[in-house]
Amino acid sequence: MDAAKLNVGMVIALSVKDSDQPLSELEKFTNDKKADIILFPEDHIYSDKLQDLQEIARKRKKWIVSGMEDRDTGGKKFKHAVIVNSLGEIVGRHRKTSLTYDELSKGFSNGDSIQAVETEFGVVGVCICYEMHFPEVARTYALQGAKLIFNPVGTGMWHEKQNLVWTAVGRTRASENGIFTVGCSHQNDAVPFVYAYAPDGECLVQSRDVNRMVTVTLDLSKCFGMFLEHRQPHLYGKLVEGKK
View (cartoon, one colour):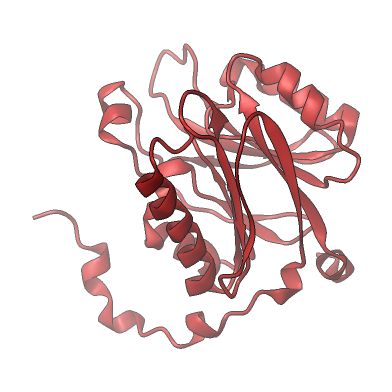
């Protein structure tokens, strides 16, 4: 990994997008000259449009992290996130591990792996929407050396209390692991939002707005692992026990 990349700071673009125009939104937001990596929300594209996303990443020379939903798989279907580099190559995939009751009722399956991804900017992880509420997912990424967690969100916030809870979760996942967290949602009939938190819990970005893109510069060398060093795993057996 290029240590210099970690120190100059990378520009993350957090996009609140129009759900009905995924490819045109990809074209529009990747045209931004400042952004190194652009995050798109949960289910931004369907799986049959993945190659189009890759081509846009290659053409614009941008890294893209995007939510993706399976379409017409003929078998199990999952909620995905993909990480595509500036050459248009898929360098990471994640299947949503914790699903809502609604998602389970629609036939989606739980992912069974939590694997951080090494990029030219540093090690990163993805928590898809609801997964951010499970500290075990973010901690697993942090134990693998992740410095940044992307949180593509499926909807905006339906009311003020939900907004307060979600941003508190984002801040907590950052500060309890000493890493950065960033998230963005769809534009729909709920209130769209973006956020970014630093390893010490400082709010770098919090915006509730219409269809737009917000950029934030992160220096991943500012991450710290103090909390991980002081863990006592031999006391945490209850965390991995199944339902009784």
